[in-house]
Image (cartoon, rainbow over all chains, first blue to last red; front, side, top):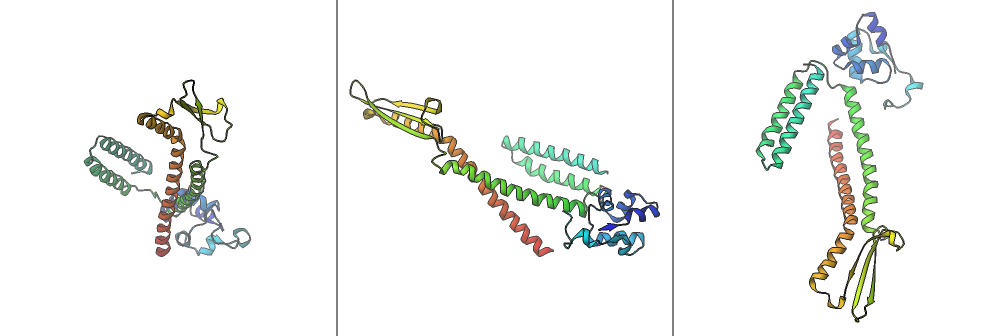
Length: 75
Length: 192
């Protein structure tokens, strides 16, 4: 799952710490999401998209060839 | 309050409660734990409420749950192997110490017996000897000597029995872990 959080954050001059505080997670979670190491829940995904004022498709992009058939392959 | 301060306070409270509980229970005072444990829990909860930062989120929960699951899997497998190895010492003849007895007749015609215990699976040579005892004039063995002989046998097999008990304890712990896991599994299966 690719995402544009870093770009959207940079456009709004927002730090990882500020974003984490606004969506109610730790900064480490934001770092992991930005690095594509952690796939957030749908709820958190919508919260991030809503905060940036865009649709969830504008933030996250599903890549079937990379993500595989299982939705939970991020162990 | 910051996360580090909260963790420090929780650690200090935990250590203090554990020390007070351990000391008082060793001294036979059971009132101190009844007061100290809830008080410690209240202090930790009060500190937690005052933390402004996010302590737990979905990622940390996922990480913890996966770690717990892996720990359980490893503990069950390692415990089962350890239990089988240790219990086999109790039930396997080849892993138990080897006991030999030899009766000989003395110059005065009395019968004596030498009992030797050798290391498991080893030939009966002096270097493999664990312990040996001689019962002189077994025909005249009195009750005290018979009891002493029984004690000797108990001492010789104590190490093996201890391993067996550890094995049974580990096995019992695995059963308990699986039972607890089953209960939680059913609970969360119904909840989510």
